[in-house]
Image (cartoon, rainbow, N blue to C red; front, side, top):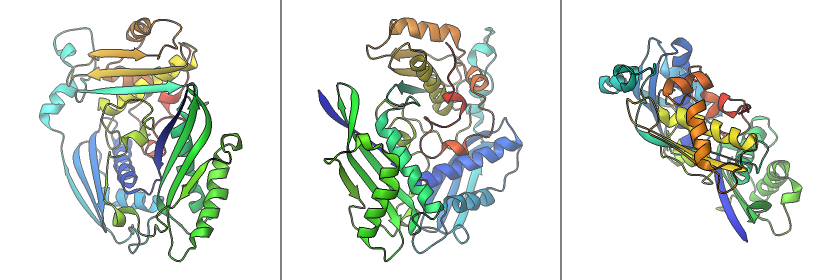
Length: 380
């Protein structure tokens, strides 16, 4: 049986990703000064304006406006006429402290308060989180999102390195993979929409994107005479970034995870410290799923963890190997519960999450080829 599956990625200059990057930059700066910082930082970007808001409790003192302008500059936005200028944009900061009601549940779990032999923070919120891995690529990610991320990252590289000098930071990519009996066999469609400077011939742009981006990333054996390419299909993409579309932290959760190939619990990652299980438990679920596949227990695996606010232990653990497991899924779930500490403190210690490592996760997916603790392969 043949089927098509499509995943999307965006460049670091996409307005939503700009906001994610700012939020994670703020988080890292607070963690550098105080590892116990509680951060829930949200960013909005619109025409000539950045608004940073949320709740932060920390001993650190961070010049948030300075962090914002540095982050915008790192992405490459310096033109208020086409996107946003890090030097002249207005930056508004509206930060309060974490609610005492939330802190009551996070500081000490209900189990610890009740005298159980558990020393851990409680989960920072209720919620459900998914982790996924498969053997389609060397980094155990689905091929469509893997290639989409590589293309969007390549767009940033050719812009920053001057290989294609007329590109601007905003852009989106989409890759459609054809499968036969669950095996990827070819690329059916590639869509690239990239911001560019004025007065660039579309024929030049299309030729450059095809030869210097697409053909440099996608292996030749996956492309054929029937592969379709849609490069800037509207014919013009000069206005971009926050000038073209309002950006907001947390609106690219499918880009951040598995490109729609696996389920997502709904919670965003960026701007949240490690006590927020939306982020930390999603990282742990990926770590578990990847190692189940990497250790040969299955060829694909999806794991769900669920938590209640103030409670340390997950309320449920679900494993699905889609019929590819060498032992029953229920047995894998039992082994996970026995061998791994899935309390917030256990996850923090296992993955070293109290370090300022989050800015590097923002772009091109939180999972895959990056050298991050939840991507490490261990013997289980």
